[in-house]
Amino acid sequence: MTNATSSGTLPGMTSVFHKMVEEEHHLEDIARDGYAPATLAIVLGAIMLALIAIVGVALGVTLVVYYFG
Image (cartoon, rainbow, N blue to C red; front, side, top):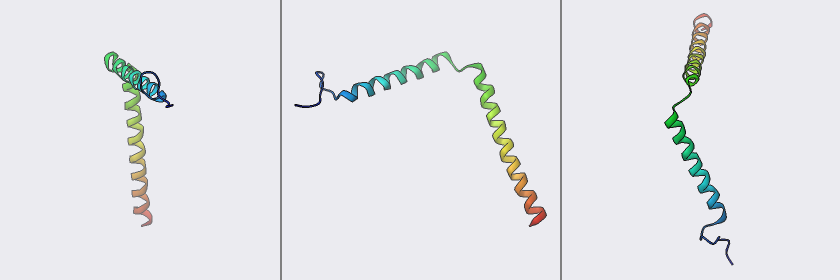
């Protein structure tokens, strides 16, 4: 006797398929509705923080090399 269901698929495959379909519907909903207005501000804020961190590290390294190098 095998582990197949009456449809001929493995038991775990059905749940994987349903999860994939649900994820696809979720992505379609996001694409249809668009992103929330706050998303742009969050993304721009994260970019600004990353740039400030990068420039700060570069400036710090430059000053250390200039004064102690």
